[in-house]
Image (cartoon, rainbow, N blue to C red; front, top):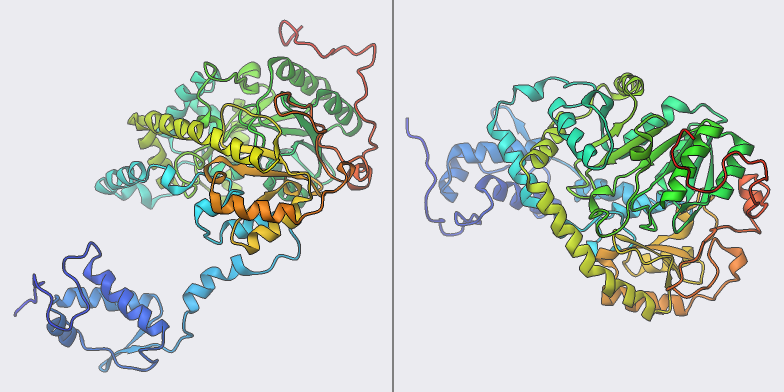
Length: 543
């Protein structure tokens, strides 16, 4: 029996290239898929036999069989016993349209779903100043690929089982010293891995909340929280975010009135302002949590983009509290790859057991393959160098972005020396601005999406990696010039002050506050004279 072998030269008339980086199988599949989609090759047409194709194109029969099998799997061909292979009847372009259908479906209004759908429209990263991740060319593709190749060379038996419900043990062991560097003492048994930080926050909510409970969140804050907690029947109320953390006076008033179960906040690189929590604010926040008996969820997913206290102060609530009342959430999608859905919870031991049980009830385990990839990246020492490059690149992008914003007459809430976001006041309602920019091919993140009640806002979040893009800035200037300024009292905004003097922004809409949240807007009442927890940093938490 003669076995066909690959030839080194392409026969005359063949569309295949033996010198291409793309495999012969992939070339055959792509060539026929495109022609079937374009209706050049019609449904019902008979494909060349395996022998004929092999002879005419100078490839082995095994290559042709593999290509035809893939075309069958993708719905392009069908095999008829004794007759050969035929083009399957299908609507042209159905696969591509199906992949776009969800993203292209109209959202009834500009809301969180609107932003999420448009994030998945696959716009070029440079055209997504409203995006929440770094562009792919900022990340290290080789780092992920090397880890995947190394795992592929090992035994695949480990991937045939569910894995451990609490998470891949070597990764949890690797996370322990990383948390120690942040002054958080957590043993591996206190760490639960999750399918991204989103699942971590979801597990916490499902553990603590029942319909009717109140959750306090930063205002502004990460928009995905609002809809998810509302789905659980919880009432989500915003605590105005100042340049040094949550407004403690307002937090006390809200905690006294609503007795919340949770406060979700970020103490380092807050999204969307990139600000942190001051030491006095952090201590007093923990005292309020003790006084009003609520848990603090510290969302620290941007943590690794912070270069440390030598560059900019960073105080973590979990480090002060040592996971007694604070539940710490981290992840790697912002620094390694958004597709690597690897997050984790660090908490008290008894809570870790409860979260593990809840995780099993919801989805059994988290995918161990991604956790093994992250473990290899962390354990081989390449991650630190990767973070150093990311931080340097963000630092180089910051000044051009700020200059571009100022040139448009806009004002940043703060000018933090670290982080990937700028929170910018435009002076106009940013909802129509975002829609107009999307019509021009740019995804923006209007401020209303970062407020629990999604009331109109003059603020907008900018991703540093895509802010100093001339074409985007030109279109934004045009849109802003066509947008009439609106009275400040109609929007969540801050008083107009010079950028060099950060404002204690209340992000409050006095005209709509009570209608949207049900909370009488009492301004910022002073603490009562007999307040046992005055607004000053105590010497220790037990004092």
